[in-house]
Image 1: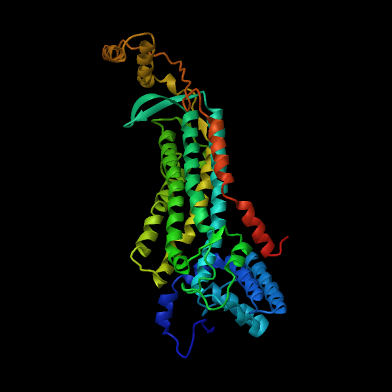
Image 2: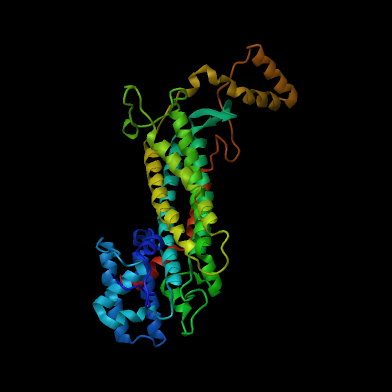
Length: 447
């Protein structure tokens, strides 16, 4: 069995070790490359303050790059008996380089190692989510423009209400994603602060250069107060969880609409045959299982911030092992959200719209407000116009005029597609991904 980083002259029982390690080996595999990057920055800083020689740094960096390549090739694993990814990386370095490998832990704790690993990993995941949100946004914008002149019923209380359009429907979800993107940007900026050097939460007697590791890792700033850096564990995951939940909420609502509108009783949209599934006994069925599963997955993701909150909410300052459990709900959430984003964009691109919905007379009454407004525009008081149209409907005298002339911003005739696109572009420019990318590539000697 491998030696623990903390091991002295006793070992826990097998039962205790199994319980305390839990799923850490499995989940820490997510963090392996981030752990290597954090170690690269840390040892570069250690050399600058005289705790490593230049030759030692050169050898260590070369071997860390080798481990990074193994991770990317899928050849890295956390061995049985090794607690976590930090222990595995240090074990490999010591195995391959001897005592030099034991020097990389000076001035840090597994507490600030996991903090920096989580932040490096999360900011990369957030960038991937942002890119997929933008891809879905583009599909929705394209469909909004393509079908901007196709009318559909709008509903309140699930009752036919007023004229809407597919331009409005697709465009509404596109604009919803701009607000979600603001949540993602806020989460990204909170993530992109450096906790490395906070050690176990109370700093170090070594003269660490925390600004150096901040710059090397491309962080916007450090978490300055070392106690707060540790307090950020759980808070970071909770706040990112709220951003994930915001995106998931938009997709879940879109999925519900798509399932409803795809049903025979609505028949507003049609999903391609290859995007549906069949029934085992009903040969006519084409079920929107993809959107149903998307709805369920996104509803589950909306519980993420509450799950994190309930794990860490009643903890005082300082580190507690409770925080380990947050990984179990937090790390896998990104893959689930990314799958939902990709699948939704794929189907939105292929979705077919019924351009003859209004041929059905059941939707005639949705034009009643248009008639009230026409009468009011011609000088009749609004309340009188409302009463007249209402009486005509009751007497079955109402005949709809299906020509729509809406011109104000955000209406059927003026979707503001360009303005919404400009808003999204402005939000995206605020992330600052390029600076992080340059720092990561430079640290890994990729440029």
